[in-house]
Image (cartoon, rainbow, N blue to C red; front, top):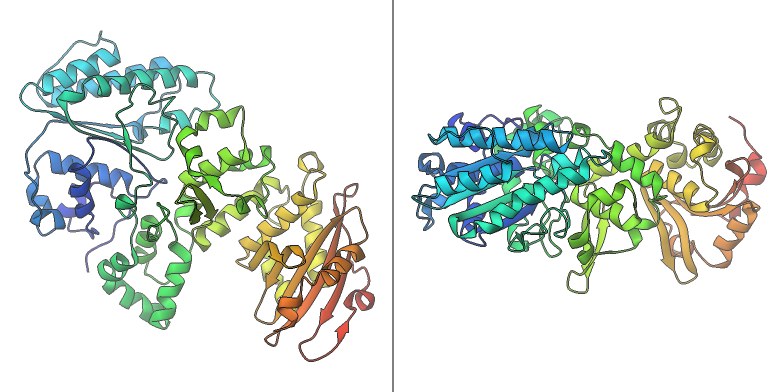
Length: 542
């Protein structure tokens, strides 16, 4: 069994160190025999840097590293090219001047590595032009840019960010002007800035980020998982004492689900899979979600009053991604721009599409991301997070066991811990918080469920219990319960209860108290008449 090392993003280091490498070179071959100027976006830690490193080794002619891999048997010419490889992930600049200096220094080092030296007086864009000219005297040049967007994303609220964007725009203009001297240019990052901003002068750039031909180039397909990690899977099944099918199903639920083109197969998160197996293949922990900060995302979600329970029902136009500019989020955030950002950063993915891929319906890719994102939403609102959390509600088992009184008491405690300064008067706010808590628990909860009578606010499904919930604001909770019954919201569950107890639950929120003020419930046993649980329980205080 080859050693798995998720910390290595160098292709040469993986191969030379006899580390496990999932062969993606068939996609690399397709890449280098396709468009010459390419933009490719993927979420953080999803294999972009490894892709760039593989291209670097390929164009430097290190054929020995590719022995036995797919591209070794394909008709590639293995011609050697000079490579300009710049990784903006290592740039800590926070103003335009320091960004220019950093780029100048990087270009001088690249020139020196090829044996020519220049003084430090030239502007960065002139030095870039001169470097390309010098390297292209004998053959065309390859340009590889990694994490092109990081320096802007890191400075989204910095007053200098527009000047920094101009610096980068002038830099990329050089690539356009030197088109004939360039064999291949590959630019990668997380977010796709609008072509009218960073890439305004580079209209020959081909964006393959949502191209189905490259949808599996980063991440692992089901076939790659079961093939490349076969020995680790067999060992993990034994360690976890699980049936193999159950083990694979749990892996899929936890780490699979990313779809990068409307008609594409889903892929597994490579970092989560790598860390899972490198740590023994037994602990289904959260790995990728714990490697990055969600502060920016959560702040924007609060600004746009993002309703987790309803906003994902609305599709995102694929065309919006072509005009998306993350810097606008600092001054003019919208629900659509937030969803674009969540899609590109990997917190949401394509669930289904309509109109030939022009309308995208977004979903959480897997349980790891769903739990992490929802906990992030809740943490952004809590002041007493360590005490009242979704995990606390889960540990109580209240909803699962049908103890509504206990569940409502915990919910009241959670709502009371949220500062009034960030609470809104909107009913959807309370619905969204409850929905986030239930999703973070891993519960099977559906919001805005359509039936013949209308749209149900929420349905919560457990093996032994089903909750059909209607929210009201500044009304008697009985109005919610009456609506459930009058519109037949529970009919599809009561007609086929499958041995489950059905809870019809009306919940009322008081905008003055900013909390649950009343609740009414009717319970339908699978083998008996309805019972008014609220009348027996009263207004419980835990």
